[in-house]
Image 1 (cartoon, rainbow, N blue to C red):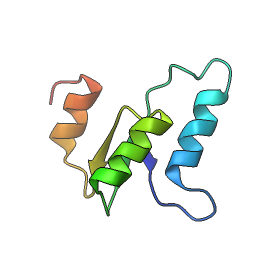
Image 2 (tube, one colour):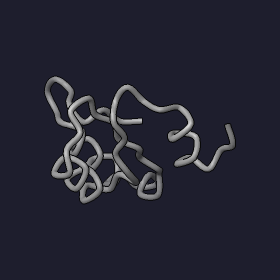
Image 3 (cartoon, helix red, strand yellow):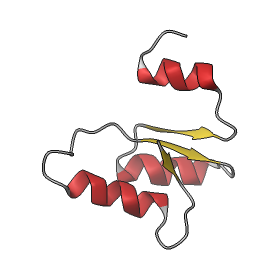
Length: 70
């Protein structure tokens, strides 16, 4: 889980950095934001996130995205 807005480095930058690390290119990144917009979601997916969920997180939705039954 990766927050979109953090001090110092934004979530999209962190996601891109994660995806550049050898052995982590296939790691699943699920982003989350308290201020989700279509533009923010597009930015995170373009950076390599699987999806971007609104906060507060809907646990059932998160488990569905992760492929885990509630």
